[in-house]
Image (cartoon, rainbow, N blue to C red; front, side, top):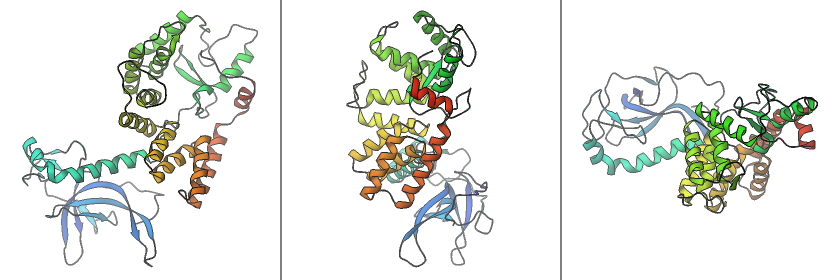
Length: 382
């Protein structure tokens, strides 16, 4: 086992592979199934005074009667090797190639729906534990890199008010580039900073461009159109239609829009004042969509998840969300981390690492044009 994830080498096996594990002189080689790679666990240190985090290449569920879990310490043939044995049905024990995994945990296989149903009572607790482990692993890992402004090639600002969507070309442009382009073109007809298409200022042309982008499956266009339809009095040029707005967000989420996931979460979250016809407030559904948005890289979704965890008195999980958001450059999350450090829910080392990552992220977001934009104006919808 190792206590570092740096310089990770590609592993030979993947989840679901059949392997033989060396259990030592007394037990010899035992067959099992890989259920997790890059397995992390907290084990007692050599001096027996504290628990330390260690990382091994694999966690394996053995085929013995107790179906014990072990971890492979090294990824070599002396410790773990490919097995020639076939998968066994967890229900009846028969071997074969046509077995199907449990759809939730992907840990065990069955030869038929009957076997899966009969084995459900024995597998239920283990299945839930594994699903929760997978979800937490996705939820608390570093989010994917954010989008970049296509002009200055810097990270898109976290605050959506500091960006503009151009429906002519479907680009999301930072406010600094939009504002600088407007200043340059003050004596000429204004055009898109990216594609130079003429500025469509009429309401009808704006809607027409959005609809054209939606026909091309532009996920951002679905989000913006849905947002306009959800406003209290409509957007002035489209009447309010919250049902259609919700459907557009759902379609946008299917196309990969994290903003659509966040809008759906807002519709389900109690107390936010976002009312959608036919959609009732539901905390569990809201949390589900906030988690999906956070996993996909929506930084501000982390603060809502932290709020849910604080209400449930899961302070450590709340701080994990806040630290991830702060590391991405979100100042309200950093303030929450400061409070967590004061209350003892964040260690000194975690607080220092978060501060350094926050500064680095803020530096990545800065530019002379963006600073000028913040001090002199705000981007408007194109």
